Image (cartoon, rainbow, N blue to C red; front, side, top):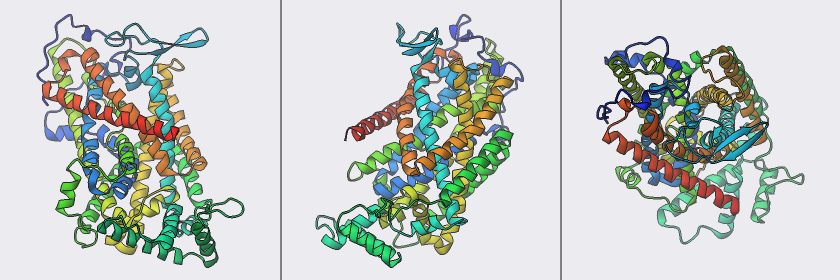
Length: 581
């Protein structure tokens, strides 16, 4: 993956010419030579760890475990590929940041294609004469418009995440206890399945292993129903056996009635986060969150290893081989969730866009300095890109290990017990994956870890989104384009305070965390191939030719883009299919 095979640039290389007046402004002062020692490089890591703290919450903890619960071991290969392959697009976008010192949305707005142009007081949509190779930064291009739509769904995604934190706190520190009482009742889908089981028994078409698993699931649901208050249980079972909706005379759900504990906690968390981000002290909490994420990941690894000592939940070597054999699960539902997960796990589209912002704040581009034709600049640029590669690959190792552990837990416990994390029972169901090893302590162990992991995602993601939204305002001409100016910094502060509250509203209006996160996963899946296309465009047309990668890197980048294209295409297909069905 050496980057030293690129052809040398000529003195008149157009890629050395500033693309606009602000190009490279982030590197105009404070030039610093890149570290060469391993210790020196370690001291400069940071943006990737921020990204790792960002992504472990929604993708790894929630969607990956859910996919394991639904699909079994069959999709382990897809989960691992999703973690590893995106890093090449991430670094190609970062390479352009090193080369030009620009923010991501400003850079993406350079990619040719259809645009919205301002004509007086009106906006006019038209396509330029050429699609590839011609610079045009007037108006708003199609990529920035797609990003804006994705950002709207990301608010819902973070609403789902803060909802998960609220559910965890409602179990840990109940206020009225209504949420705790609600989750004691089995989910509606489980109750309806139990009613069919009581009437018809198990299907004779089920294979032996699956029939045994389904029998155990029905017995578990029966025990959970026995614990429900008698009069409510009778009404629920009567309606379920008759195939009627499980609601009372007022239309209120008998199994998922409205709860207030989780919403009270969500509001409190949202307000706290707004205050923290407004006063600008998120850095300390962010670092603390990284420590908690790593700690929780090691606890999860310990749980997975401990499961191997139990006869009931151990994952065999044959299971692992099956999971790595590029197979698919039965039916399309699990595959749909897996591809939605592929849009979120590892570095998702939001993280791909936000990573260069954190690199700019860390000072990578500033340390390189403005582009020039000197050998010193080239050496320094290659040196800082080497630091960036260490940063990105180190974070990839962290979230890949975490992802594999969460997935195996979903397979080993939730899939075998027939549990599916969903809706208002999301956190309580996920906690069950710790019970076989940690017993009664599982609740506290998981909930404290979940609060740490999910909240770190909520905090860091809102901080990154605020920077992107402020930059979007500059791209469309509503505010300054100067990313380092005081006006931009004030705008980031204001948006940082507003976004967490918007996420709270999203959860209160639609309290289904898994669905909110899955919708965001599909929109990110659409954005992923677009970012791959942009990375290739930057490499071929805009990045300084002296920094362009070698043949091996180009092959891996192309493979990354193709996988992102498949993921995005499937996401679009499934969304349209569901809308039409």
